[in-house]
View 1 (tube, helix red, strand yellow):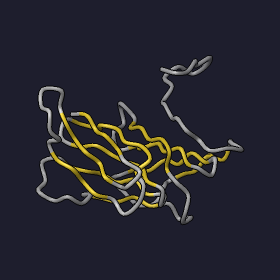
View 2: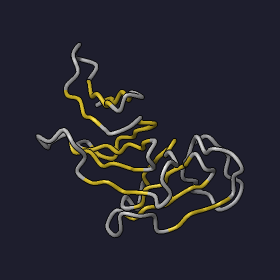
View 3: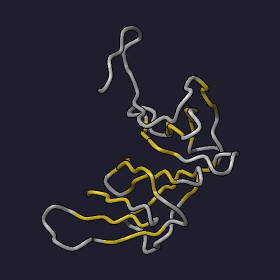
Length: 136
């Protein structure tokens, strides 16, 4: 499953063996990033500072779950899921912060890391304790 995201807020899914989109979803604002998290779901980050969880098995065109930032107008530019602790979602934001959500719990981040002066455009988990080189 491949996701195509649009600034208009549309997310389209397709596979390489079909010429037409399998299905499309709509968000309320610009979708800035997306990532597959399982064979049947993906997450997206948007300009409103939300991470949305989409289930392709559902008949709904809306997100199954929405996770918010407290600050309005901070976009989520990059997202990834921890490969071993799949309940943890890491998001890089336009305010230079990195946020971590635990999707089993609250809809707001469990922690925030303030280490960047500019927008965070890529996030990745590093599995070595010392000397991690990016990208992975």
